[in-house]
Amino acid sequence: MLTEAPPSRPPYALRQRARSSIRARPARHYWPRLLLALTALACATHAPSFARPLWNPDEGYLAVQARMLAHGGSLYETVVDRKPPLVPWLYESVFALFGSDSLTPVRVCALAAHVLTAVFLASLARRRWGDRAGRTAGALYLLLSIGLNPEDTQAATFEVFMLPWTAAAMWCADRGRWTWCGVAVAAAFLTKQTGGAMLLPALWLCCRSPRPCTAALKLLTAAAVPIVATALATTPTGFLFWTVTGSGAYASISGSELHVLVRGLTNAAILAAACAGVLPPILRVLRIARTGCGDLWLWLASSTAAVIFGFHFFGHYYLQLVPPLALLATLALHVLPREHLRRSVAATACGAALFATWGFLAPRSDLTHAQRVASAVTARTAPDDRVLIWGMHPETYWLANRPPSTRFLTAGLLTNYSGGRDGGRVGERYGVPGSWPTFHSDLRTRPPSMIVDDSRGEAYGPGRVASLRRILDGYDEVARVDGAVVYERVHAGRAGA
Image (cartoon, rainbow, N blue to C red):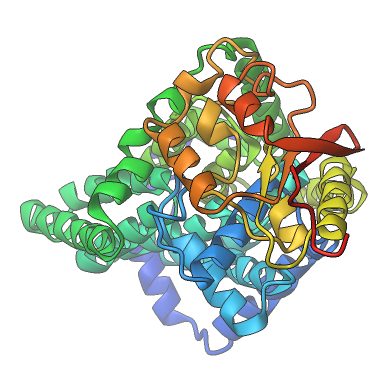
């Protein structure tokens, strides 16, 4: 039976003792061996990532954005999204090196991001609790990082590339490197806005430093400079609008309360099942002893608030919880007897194997639909013809290899349809402010030779959007593909058809 340790021997290894023990024992081969093991484990857990050409619409959106940027587009002007710029720029750079026909090079970058996150967590745990804790933290992160729906964990999207920056911020704060910590917090925010939540645990550690005011000033200054520089490098007003102020209607849950609640509880339950091997040790240690790791608990709390913020609870949001959970589990397993470590790691590994199998066997209904529609678009248009896909699958542009006629790649930006809304707050007046005049201007400047209505009876279809019906007056229906309606401009079909 586990009993509380006597006061003279704390229930966890003090940081000073951990440091001295690390110095005392040779560690010449520790990092090369651990890096090799973590890389192998990352390849095993994320092997399903390479099993299909595309996992979700976010990947498709990023791929289309990257092509638009490569052809002279300007971020937050002619290329828009509600996200910061680092991941679109990453896609653009990878496409410039390896071509834009495959996402495999981007997936390799995502795999490297997971390995880097694991390395930072291993270094944090080793510094605090010793060599074995370092190995445990890195392995637990990689095993838990696939503990959600495969389309959320195997895709190369914003959260995956944000996590190394969040881990790096905590790693720098733990060592009192406040300037670099601020840079990492800024990079996390510029990858996805919720990465800014790392500012809270970083400031907590600032307050525990010998010179808290100086540390906080360095941290905040170093965090602000990259963000301001990025805004100036794009368009300051556009950057502010698209990343901060222009998403009020999107963040509201009005019209989708029940759906959002069910999704949030479902994804929380899936992650809890993936963490079944580590949650009991965490709760047990929390109950019997003071851990003295308030920064880790604050990291978990701020990440939870980041998941809640926005009120959509998509599965990939929950990835932000995995690094602090891995470290807290490592702490708990460091305190408890060693048999708990073996059982917890074995249970987590079995869960990861099930999630990896799910990744290989997951259905491909949305991808199959997008491929069919893309094939129809390719067959009926020339390579330089611009098209308009009225739907929620921007990947269709990428699969068809056709340029879009507008900067708005989904109907959600124009109607606020997203997150399972049932129509209560879906329509032209709920779209991004100022989007419809810009949309009409885009179509006048670059009229699409083909329009695909991919709404398939949803609340943003032509029956609910009068402006779209007027646009379709100049087009003839020529085909139906898997529920999507294909229109061609009157007297402007493909040359030679």
